[in-house]
Length: 150
Image (cartoon, rainbow, N blue to C red; front, side, top):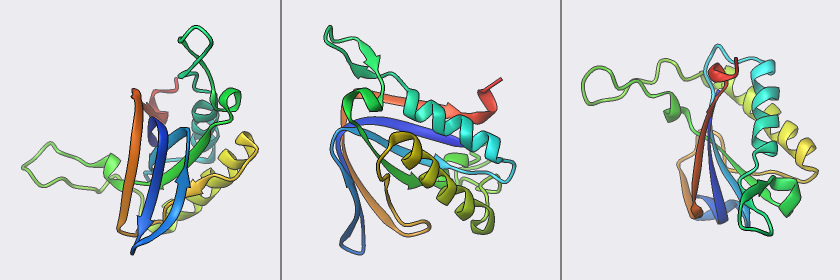
């Protein structure tokens, strides 16, 4: 699994002109899932996301996590995070999990993040043509890959 965390002051997802998820301060999380991903990867990544200390403290240092700032999460599935760009100019996506594998893991990630955060995680719609709007705060953008956990 790969996640791109963007610290935002606001973010939203729109599908067919309707807002499916919207947050104020917190993380916009773009989530890529591959066939090799497991529940262990999911648990590890969820803990990392919720525990990531990149919000400012009283001294302006990045020392606080989502819970410390009553932050929110907007979670967006994004298979293109596993694009292969080695050959040619058209990326391949063979490493990205197919929907029968990715959807259950995406839904488990929503539930896990909601439980860890203690509030509802906002989302896009899996597989839809989504329009994402955000105001990146900092900018702070972090890439996390579960293959790097050891």
